[in-house]
Amino acid sequence: MASTYSTNLAIELIGIGEQSGVWGTTTNNNLGTLLEQSISGNVTQAITDGADTTITIPSGTTGVARNIAIEMTGALTATRNLIVPANKKLYFIFNNTTGGFAVTVKVTGQTGVSVPNGAKIALVSNGTDVVSLLNYMASLTLGAALPVASGGTGITALGTGVATALGINVGSAGAFVTFNGAGGTPSSMTATNLTGTATSLNIGGNAATASAIAVGGITGLGTGVATALAVNVGSAGAFVTFNGAGGTPSSMTATNLTGTASGLTAGSASAVALGGITGLGTGIATALAVNVGTAGAPVINGGVLGTPSSGTLTTCTFPTLNQNTTGTAAGLSATLAIASGGTGATSASTARTSLDVPSNAGSGASGTWGINVTGNAATATTATNATNATNATNATNASNVTTNANLTGAIVTSSGNATTVNMSPITNSLGADVALSNTALYFDGPSVAQGASGTWFVSGSVVVGDGTGSQQFYAKLWDGTTLIASGYTQSSASAETMQLSLSGYISSPAGNLRISVREPAATSGFIKYSATGEGKDSTITAIRIA
Image (cartoon, rainbow, N blue to C red):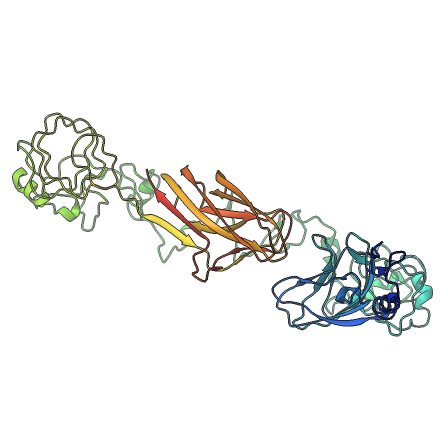
């Protein structure tokens, strides 16, 4: 019967009747090397920056994961993973890497435990994943005060009476006074800054002496002040408060009154000077009573003129000629320029020449024209030299069409010489590898920004791989919403890369056309941009066809 190996520590178990004469060598290796390494072994393991680091427990021989204490070293630029076997085993881990990043110790495909930089921790593999060894202690004594950053106070001892006060309810005699909390009922207190409302307050032991409290240096009230203070604001005899009502005083001298006076009598209104004016001119009072815009009303800045019987306009502007006017502009004699919306000419023939417009009685137009034709040109018989024409539709019975160069952006359905429709491709390639770091997500590979119009033919390919073993890869060609095509491949070796190619059609894309990849069972795969060294391994091309 051949030797077998133990489940967790891979110790060689000699079969009955096996290894006659040499079993001592195997036993010494089991006891003196493998078990000793598992119980007291301390090893240093460099953590790879940029990929997972995997350690193992080989059957019958030494291995890094067999050691109970593992010190992780190496210079890191990001958080990394240390992959241990699924064997049930205890580990003491020390993250002694540089760079300040954590390292997660876990079984492949599991969550594990993140070990912060500089931390030392006890972990255990339970056969499925790595978990913390301890989560409860019956008692704990520390050599130094637990700092605030670790949930402690940093205080090594309490002051006299503090422990007793901490055991008393807030608001009770002898309790601490908390910020915004109740003051309790202290036997005495010196208050330097109290805010809020005092429902009952003894000052100096005698509330009757409150008049001795100085307010702004005032120790007594003037004659009638106490009576006035008891009168409601806005009533006769009340104080006039800032922004308050004036009450009904028997007399008052107002130096600065604002607001609306519903009824005001002046001793002599004629004596009130407005900008030095003490009287109104003839007819001014009558004009002021007429609605603006009505005959006889004054003209205000920015207002309407009304209907004056006569007037001399020295500075009047019109936003648009003849806007909101009636009558005849008899004085307009000059030729209105093209820049002002005119023709720059005084006759129809001269105007057509100025505007480069053919006569409506002519047989056609020669030369180069920017023509946008719609409708049914049933009588056009000789159209020559029409270049750069776009959007020409329903032109029937047109014979002798001799030149149709530079016709772009049109779908030609009649006979003749249709020029080439512009079908310039849009292409793009990855510029760096894309990590497939989440088994539930598709990660975008190459993409193109083609816009949302038209019908597109799109094709492309991606190169994928995973250095940890045989893995599956899903791929899809889409616009972020609509799926065009999908594909699948699986590697058969750890160093193997594969190519996935996809193509199809789509109209009015909702977003950028792209190829996205998902690795459903691992987080160590990549979309490669230059496995060949040419930099075009993962590329997509889109061509507008309509």
